[in-house]
Structure formats: C-alpha cells, structure tokens
Length: 349
Image 1 (cartoon, rainbow, N blue to C red):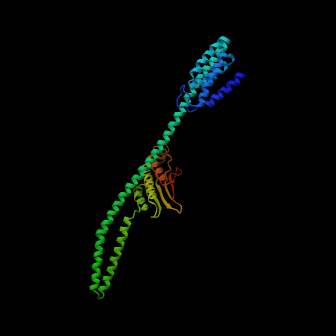
Image 2: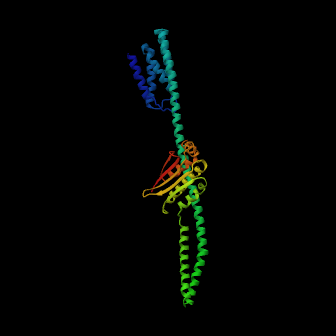
Image 3: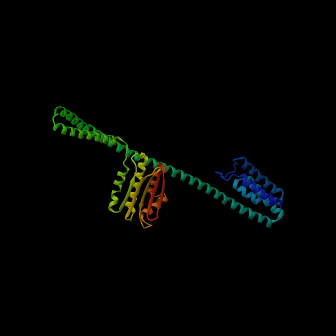
C-alpha cells in the first residue's frame, strides 16, 4: 500500500514538474521543475534497486523517464528489474516488465500526440496569420484601385473644367463685353430692351458655366448615376427594381464601397442567376447607410448560392472582396438565401 501511494504521489509530481509544451525531447532539463523531476526519477529507480517492493514504482518511472529521456533512470530501472528477478522469481518480475513495456508504449504515443497537437496549433496560428495578412493586402489592393480610379476621374474632370473655362468661358466673357458695348451704343427702344434680354441670358449662361466648372473640380462621386450605369445590362435579362436615396455629401470611401459592392453583386447576378427579378436599394438613414441587393432566385442550388458557399470556404473571391470592402468602412455584412440570394450591408455614419 505504501508503494501504491508513493506511485500516485510520484506520478502527480512528475505530471506537474515536466513541461507539457516542450519544443524538443532530450536529456537536457530546461527548468528547475524538470531538474526536480529528473532527479526524482533517478532517486526512485535507485530505491527500487535496494528495496525490492519498490519495483512496483518502476512502470511510472519508465513512463516519465521515456518522456524526459532520462537514460540514467532507465539504466537503474533495468538493474532494479534484475534484482527483482533474483528476489521474486520470473513470474512477478515479468508482470512488472509487461506493465513497464505498456508504460513505454503509452509514453511514446503521448509524446507523439503532444508533438502533433503542437504542430497543429502552429499550423493553425500560421494559417490565421496568413489569412489576416492576405485580407489586409486584399484591402490595400482595393483601396489602391479605388484611389487609381479616383485620380483618373479627377484628372479627366480637371481637364474638362480647364477646357470649358478656357474656351467656352472666355467666349462668353467676350460676348458679354460686346453686349455691354452694344447696350451703350444702342439706347433706343425696342433695340435696347432686346439687347438687355440677350445680356441677361448670357449672364445666366456664364453663371451656369461657373457652377459646372466648380462641380467638375469638386471630388464628388455620383453614386446614383454609377449604379444606374452598372445595372443597365441587367435590364436585358431581369426586371430591375431600384430605390436609390443617398446624398451627395456622403464620404468618398463609403461611396466607393457602395459602388464596389454593387458592382460585385451585379457581376455575380449576371454570371449565375436564373431569376427574373432583382432589387437594388441604397438608402441613407440618420445613423447609417444601407445597401440591399436581392436576387429572387427560387433555385437553392443556383449559381449565386453556390458562389456564396464558395465564399464560406474562402474560394469565392467576389464575395470575399465584398467582405473586405464592408470591413474597410467598418460596416456589417449579412448574406441570406431565403427566397433567393440577398446581400444586406449596413455602414455606420
């Protein structure tokens, strides 16, 4: 009974002292606790040499010394088996030897399981880190593409604004000056009144030109017009219902996000959908922006739904781009398959 209790205490101490996350298994203790366990195994194996009843502790010693690569304790255990063989005879000793062999087998398998578990955690962590890095790079690419498009649009608007200002604006200014001279010369009626009406018309035209040039220089993006142009190809195959209610003062990143998400959804619908009706809604609320694109596809195994399933397994890059765009403006994305394929996006103001 004393040996049984001693075996329980010995196993508990070694379980506590030996590290569970060792990076390698060798006869090199790496901490104070492992030194204690290492010494304890040698002491118990030594006791079993001189005190034959303590041989019942040897399976526990063998289990832990196999794990810690304590070859000294292993040699002492073999000597203890020899002494036990001489003391108790072959039958009792063989029983202890068989249990010790089982302990070696269990120790080796436990070690392999620990190594596999450690490798799995490392691979899982690497996978999460790589996915995070890929998502970040994908977001950077999307932002770079949006910036490139914005710069191209801004350059073209500036070019048009310069041409209007230099050509049409100067021509109208010259016409207004000439009209002022004519009004000074021709004061008789009804010629003067008619010339005055022409001058007013020219002034209105000049004001409209200035307003147009100002709008062209502004960095505003017309979300409604972009969505209408993108949705135009849908009219050939679907009945499109659009509800676009968004102000011009919407921040530019949100505008690009809404346009990009809508473009991806329309592309998926054109490629995969077999429905007849499509809803596109963009609404501005006091605290958020809302985008809903609903493809009324009754076939649960339609291409659009399969595309969603690919997204869930990191294969569908289209919906992954949608998720990246939503995350870039700190929004929330919800995709459902009830009564078709539905993309629901909310973006806080």
